[in-house]
Image (cartoon, rainbow, N blue to C red; front, side):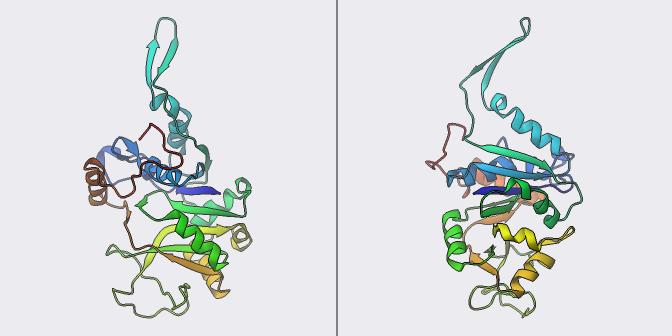
Length: 265
């Protein structure tokens, strides 16, 4: 199963020093936010990624093209134009970077990577969210539901849109009711999709307002409720908080001893 990471959109402005770069390339603990997300999925054994780039997608391409060099110690013989690599470090990842445009909708970005999806199911996640979602449990929930798509839900951080969920855990966008804080859930920007969803995507689809609306009408939209850590990196405050968690060794998304754990932690 491939992990699709949405990393397009406009430049990051959450850190003055990092303006002019894609938000997924913002630094946390010496590594791009994108790396943290990929590392988390890798811990669960997923090592094939499709990155939907947009703004300055070349930065993302260059990062992975030179990843082996960046992650290792090197000696450069300038006179003889030779490079010796020491302490060779890398990841067991296969990464496909696709230019899906700067102003494309989420639906357009997903449509543009259809040719790279060969499996029956795939995961889509945003390139600016950190969490400790139990990926195995999420996939089991999706399989058990038998639905075409599963949306992972999280508790609101205080600035998120609340979602209408019925007693069976289905999203019902056409039956919105006032929700109490205790019952409130928001979109955690992580989805499991069956390949059939490509038939429901039109050229300029917004994922929630169009695709998910169609699937909910057909009762083909399930949910997985995540009660743990989840944070979208949207502001400087979010970035500082994530950095503090990483620096203190308490980052919930940092795991050790996973299936694809490498020396490069």
